[in-house]
Image 1 (cartoon, rainbow, N blue to C red):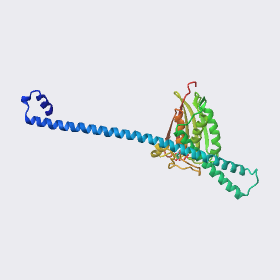
Image 2 (image 1 turned 90 degrees about the vertical axis):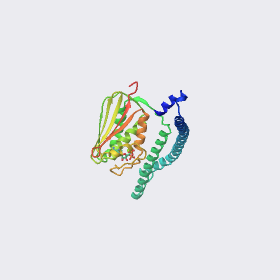
Image 3 (image 1 turned 120 degrees about the vertical axis):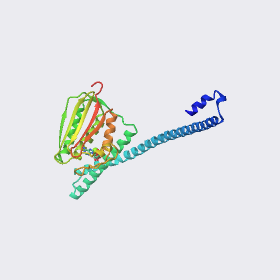
Image 4 (image 1 turned 60 degrees about the vertical axis):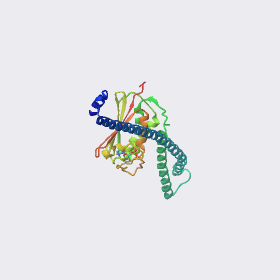
Length: 292
Ligand SMILES: Nc1ncnc2c1ncn2[C@@H]1O[C@H](COP(=O)(O)OP(=O)(O)O)[C@@H](O)[C@H]1O
Ligand SMILES: [Mg+2]
């Protein structure tokens, strides 16, 4: 206020005192200093933003390089693993000569280990492909219920070993636009998780319902449920949480991360409801296809 009054006085030099002028000078100096500071701060901010953008680009390029490298390594590992697994499958048929029990046991171990490694390599390959933006969906419009039925049928074979029953309640829904291999992976992962993390004799329920312009699918199990503090890590990469398989099944912690990426690539959404002691429900929704 004082400064404004003094500035007004400037129009009438007779009224202005030496003291007033000193005061105004001080104000001006500090104003210029703050302007100069502002300029410095602005330059600094500009420099920071420039550096940040450069680092972001570098990081993006390095990530692409990492994906390319991982993709190449995984791809090169895949073929020998397919051969090892294929030949051990073949030997176990005993079509090429009978084996002693010990030989069979060893070959079974080779078969199982190479199968596990192949799954891991396939998952890593999927992540690299999806992250590099090269996931090309071979999508067609069709009834999603058909795919659910196929996947439930296949997973029932695994579930039976743990006396787990899988029920399905599939309502009539409009067609959706989906890649059946990729969405098959989604169903396989949700069903295999429900089987893997649930105890003997429990039930799994798969539902499909129309909801506005979406088709909503849920996979509900009677397993241990997921602690609240772990829920937001669930869809991350290599996240094996406190819930572990109940019958020694293999776990890599990559399945749900791939699952989410595939659903999102279909313009869909995935979410979970779970409570320790009350089982887990995974939901996902896909938009109804225009022609559906
Ligand atoms: N239905 C479920 N019930 C309880 N925990 C689950 C369920 N599904 C996933 N999880 C937890 O989330 C983790 C990540 O799952 P996922 O990414 O599919 O990897 P993986 O099946 O290889 O362990 C699992 O290791 C488990 O701890
Ligand atoms: Mg899984």
